[in-house]
Length: 93
Image (cartoon, rainbow, N blue to C red; front, side, top):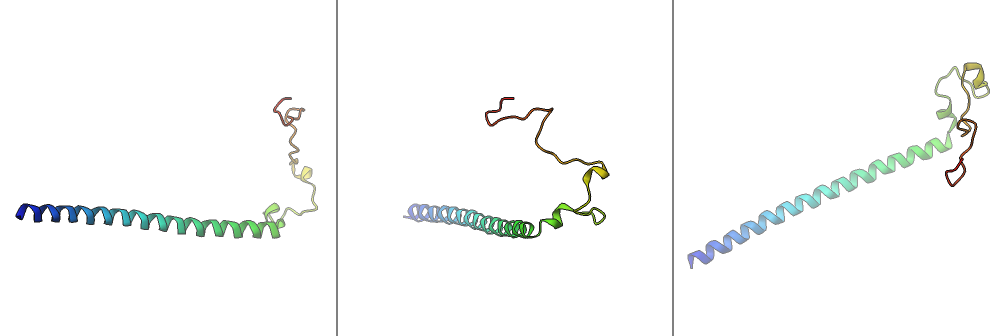
């Protein structure tokens, strides 16, 4: 009889340990999901803000004005042309 009681306690102890570990893992996963949803929401709001006010991103330096030509400052706009040839949708030149 005493051996049976000891076996039941061992099974109960193992069950408590497994339950505790699994509940801790589930709690951690829930916390990570909540954190990622908050970060995603912040990023979404920042993107929406940038879409509303794109001029604040284009000209970070106050001395560069939107109407100023970039060539005067030594810059040029990228037009997608690589080495004089344009790649088509199949990847061929």
